[in-house]
Image (cartoon, rainbow, N blue to C red; front, top):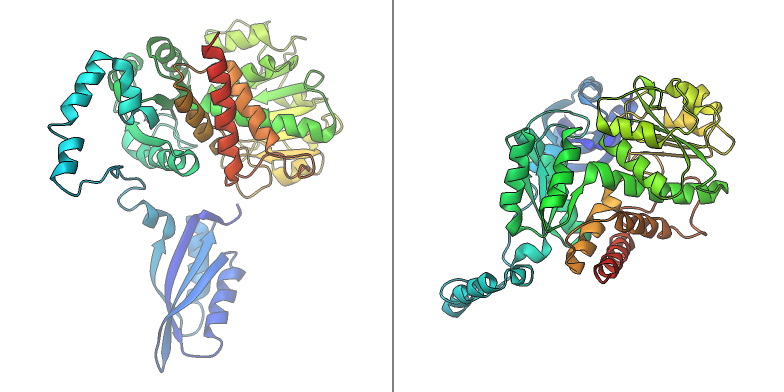
Length: 464
């Protein structure tokens, strides 16, 4: 069973006998059923009974029921109500619009709205570039999805994708003071998505594409980058690639290997896998093998998917054609952005000495992290309940902060590399160890470091 998670947190309202031991018995029963108890409060106390609220984390719905059964089995104890804390924080949504200026009187209204606003409209009409200076465009990002590749849930549609896009917007604000807004489109037509985003673009200083299925995501990003004068970023691709590269920098420092000497096997050739491979090659990794569910991508095959064909032509220099299990034998680094339980601890044991394993499939990694750690020197996942979480939140808020501050019109590979290096450098040599190769997402230095690095790179390139 997976570990209890704050993502499946509940509050139980329980009636119990008014005895000296009742609260401890409830806590013991919940813990004995595997729950992670985080709080217990006495809400009401009477001569014969007490009402208590117990907050706890569980693993899933089945685990929740096991905890309820354990508590209800106690003599005289009854669970009256369950509140799901995750659903509670989503009631009414997670973001809101608040004005940045006061509207206390007629004078304020005359400047913020009519008649004064007409002067600002005229100024922008005469000089469209002033929109970046005089409107929300200077600090606003559209978080765009069609709901076809949401988390590990797949094609669940735009309405069901909205909580994720709201969350993304909240992260932009919390970590980099960027105002972001969900744009969930009720279409999966590539041309319609491109037309719609282009039509919306005057409001925004950047576009963050999110949870759009491959291979359409590649064309949508490429076309929008070509046809818009604001930066367009597909976080599932490049956000993942940035943080993976940052983690790899520090992992290789930890094991004393050079980026140009290592053999890297990447499992998964979708959006994230392609972007990771491209960034690895750009940083001097010469020996990369990319694997799909059918095995290694190699030059001996012809692929109808142009992205797989590109991988066949630019990776796997020895034209290896075997399975993923065969590919990891002797490899220095395994990077997984694919599916759960593809490898075992025994497979990791066949890798080179001081191997590095990034098993990032969510919620279940490509290999059990505990088993992998028995054989690899450094193990990272995409989960928060293991060390070394490779989390896109380390990248995208600061990246867009830097792009907006520089007034950038595009995103280049140099900016992605600068962001990765900035993240890696937030872990100094004294802190770094096999269980700490990436900084915490709550480290306030990270977003600012990324923003500064990206802004500097963007301004430098604009002067060329």
